[in-house]
Every structure is written in C-alpha cells, then in structure tokens.
Image (cartoon, rainbow, N blue to C red; front, side, top):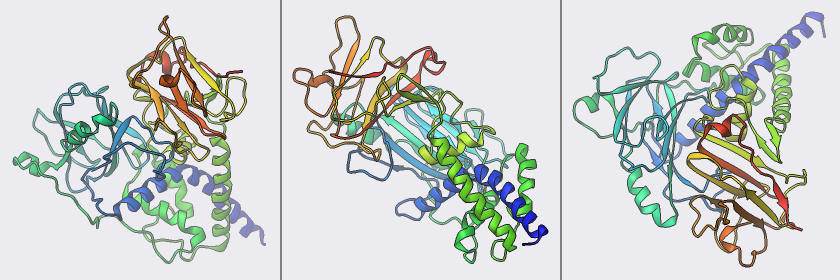
Length: 433
C-alpha cells in the first residue's frame, strides 16, 4: 500500500469516526420514520393512538411505561404548517413532545408548558415565512420532518375508555384548511419530497449513503455548517451518491470508522450517568443535546425519543445498594422516607433481562402514586416489596419480580427541582434477610 493510499484511508477513518458519532441518531430517526410510514395505517400529518397499556407480550418497544397511553405522528411541514389542536383534559396530565430529525425534544405541549386547557398551536417549518392570526401561537420546528410522541396519563384499566375518547380529540390540521374553517386532517400516505438512498450502494457503505440522504432531506442548523463542510471530503454533502464507486482507500477507512465508533458508543452506554445508591442517573442535559454528540448517540440507541429532564426524570437500577445484581431469588424492600417529589406523578416499573414487563399473578407491572390500595406507614413513609414470591400481608405494596435477573426504572413526571439538581436522593433497594 502506497503512502498516499494509506493516508487517504486514515483521513477517511478519522473523519468517518466524527461523522458516525454525529450522524448515527439522524440515520436512526429517518430509518424509524420510513419504517413506520411503510406500515398501514400510518400516514404523515395524522395521529396513530395506542388504545391500551403495555403488557409483557408487547415486544416492539423496550422498557415501555405502564402509566400512559402513547400517541404518535410524523409531520412533513414542507408544504405548509400544521395546526395541533389540543382538547381540555380537565387537569389530566399529558405531554405532546415534538422532536426534530436530530432527536432533539425542541418543544413540549402539555401540562408543564401550556397547561391542560383547550388550545391550538401551529407547527411551522424552518423556511416558513408567513403570518398568523394573533390567537394562534407558532412553534418553529428546526426540521421539516417532526415526530410527535404523546403520552396521556391513565388512572388504571377502568380509565381507558375515557382516555381513548380523549385521544380522538387531539387532531392535526393543515393551516390552510384551519383558516377556512375546515378542521379535518389531511393524511399524506406518500411523501415525494424525500430523497431515497441509492440502491446501488454496497451494503458495507449503506450507513454513509443513508446519512448523506438524511442530511439533504432535513439539513442541520446553520451553526453546524462548518462541521458538515468537513464531511464533504467523505462525500456526505454530495448531491449524487459517491458511494456507488468510492475510492477503495476511502471505503476501507469509512468501514473501519463505522465499526470502531459503534464499539465506542456501545462501551459508553455502559458508563453514561452516575450511580447513586445503586441507581444510574443521568445528570447531563438530555433531550436537547446541543453539541454533545456522544450523549445524543447514547440516547438514540438506548431510548429514542428522550424527554427533556424538566418533563421527565428517569433513574434505572440493575443492582441493589450494595452493588449486587438484582435477582428474583432475593427479596427486596425499597423504603421511601420522602415520596418521590413531582408535579405530575411517579412510578417504578420492573423489567426482565430483555427490558420487557414480567408476567405475574396479579398483572402488576409498575407501582406508583396511583396504585390501588397502596398502604403508607404511619409516619407517611412508603415500603415497596420487590420479590418473586407473594409477600403475605403486604400484597398491596408488592411489585412482582421474575425468578432471575431483573432491573427497574423509577420515573418522575414533571420532577420538582430537588430531583434534577440532585438534592433528592433515591433510596437503595435492600435485600430482606
């Protein structure tokens, strides 16, 4: 191998590592959009609503919650803005989280930000220059494609009919129709605006072609122009795919870069956050990532659609307070001197080794402030019993575990300041001997 050829490969390798870390979440986001839009009944600019809470047999999404019903919509704002109509929820918690194609949770509509009264908000694309009536508030999206992930609180199975009825009242309306008094949606099953990756690109370079196309479909912000220009050298700004007949040295460098960066991100997923009392907590600003590309990649891979910390704070435990792996052969107690402080609600969900709910005799997959017949101690503290066997006389506070390894997530929705600033310490899980 000549010196020039080796230098080319190393240059592609170094640039490729930067570009993969930067672009991995963008490719995941566009792959997710394309995958869902290929299924019926998904269409752009229209909600799809989950009608029931997640159960152990649901294996599509890892670590789901058992507290809210999800609603989802993919928008395309290139043609015109979309009006998001919100019903009056009578104080019921909900959030409609808006994500750009770079996985940033750039806006939340719901109890914390806009309240729970009826209202209309106009989501406008980055190039839109029109004017709006005073009564309509504009939400400027950084990209023309936007993912809405909605969560509506459910107070038990008997509450599902009411929430299902409420879901139907959340609507998406093209601005032109809304201004003419037509409040019907206009779902778009085909999207001819989006460019498609060149099918002639070899498999080992498909990631790079997907990234090139994703950057064209939804360009980055102007303050990242300098970074993107450095990627021109490896073909990521080209109008026509260079990856069908790429210089072999560049190809080797990019293939190596993808493999090396994947391994680096995988290692980082095991080291993100801080462990306190056996709980892994992320204290960095998640949801709006700025130029923290490593955290953005971690979030996209382990939990695409992360909410900003002001909306939801998650802590996960794989081990007890002594650093031992959580396992159903043991019996645990989680004692709260102070109940998790939130403005909305809290819950702790239990998952098996594959991050799904666990079948159990009482069909309880989470425990929280809305659990029926919850029993507090006389001093207002709370004990939760986490074990495989039924705890005699304490079933009201039992969160069933499998017989082998498991993990738990404690969720705080609209956490109070003492949670996110670290003042509130989550107690450890302790083995009952």
